[in-house]
Amino acid sequence: MTCPGAVLTIDLDAIGANWRLLRARMGTAACAAVVKADAYGLGMMRVAPALAAAGCDTFFVAQLEEAIALRVLLPQAAIGVLAAPVHPCEAVYARHRLMPVLNSGHDIDAWGAFTRENRGGAGADLPRAILQLDTGMCRLGLSPAEVDALAAHPAALNGIAPAWVMSHLACADEPEHPQNAEQLRRMRAALPRLPAPFAGAPVTFANSSGIFLGADWHFDLGRPGYALYGGNPTPGLPNPMRPVVRLDGRILQVRDIDRRESVGYGATATVEPGSRLATVAVGYADGWLRSIGGRGVAHVSGTPAPLVGRVSMDLIVIDVTKVPGGAAPGDMVTLIGPDRDIDAVAADTGTIGYEILTSLGARYARTYTGTGGAPSA
Ligand SMILES: *Cc1c(COP(=O)(O)O)cnc(C)c1O
Image 1 (tube, protein in one colour):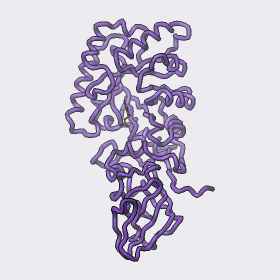
Image 2 (tube, rainbow, N blue to C red):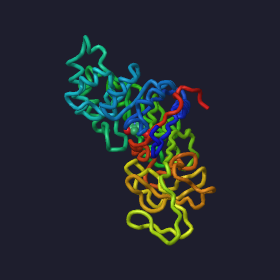
Image 3 (cartoon, protein in one colour):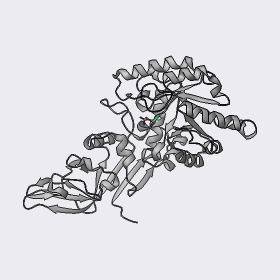
Image 4 (cartoon, helix red, strand yellow):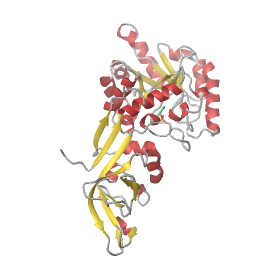
């Protein structure tokens, strides 16, 4: 019993239900799960087994260290690392059966050399590789010119076993953006130019929002992250996903204001006599980002209680004047929950829900509910 200052509750059944919903949206194609950055801050150690229980057998992470931790958890899963090995770490990928994403001629040459050296014997089960094409992000992957260069020198791929051809959408959360059709056009133009063994390999293209762009973007495997964790993949439309995260902070002190006063660092906010303020044990060191100062809203049993003044490292102050029956020290107030989801908190903060999730602090007491495998509700 520690009476924590804030409690983060993560609904594993909702994550499992969200994965099943996304898989259903993919129709006959398959659906993976992206669990990079500690499953978007929610804890990969708990989230990945829940997704596996829901039926997911293919996972993506961003970094080798994440992949090694995931391999321990899920000995049978297919695991893709969204980056190629930095030489000489190829053998680490092979030892843990991790699929590298080859993003450049440099990556292809290095992984090809490794696979050719280790072919046969133990090399018989070297991991398959994912080849990424850049269709319009200028971030990772082969450009159209590099695809042509590869087609002219297909021997660079000797020894490499293909898993998927991959690309990533820049604007999938804006369905009307012309970039979506343009990236699809470039993908369709590039695929027939790929030499063996990637010619005809299955394709993975869509992230969470991409799955909702329609069947043209689906190809063979979806790669959702954000929507699994309750984020809205269709901004501006009702959120089809089940909420996953709830954050409650504890009231440490309640203060009745009897004269005009300023609140918090910088004295940026003023409150009038008759106001009642509550100080809550959540601050920017918990990932309650400072840029929400003056704009955020907590809820006390469903009643909005606006944030007053700046966010401190460990504390915020909220206005509980309108809360029926008042609010008392020890009470919990809801910062993320049914009345304010991660997308709304992100809008208040001036960021995206992805950053709200991945900023969730290490000091929260974390409670996991469900298993991920329960029937979807
Ligand atoms: C993070 C990431 C995803 C998942 O994207 P969401 O928008 O969270 O669904 C998929 N593919 C790649 C390459 C990524 O980096």
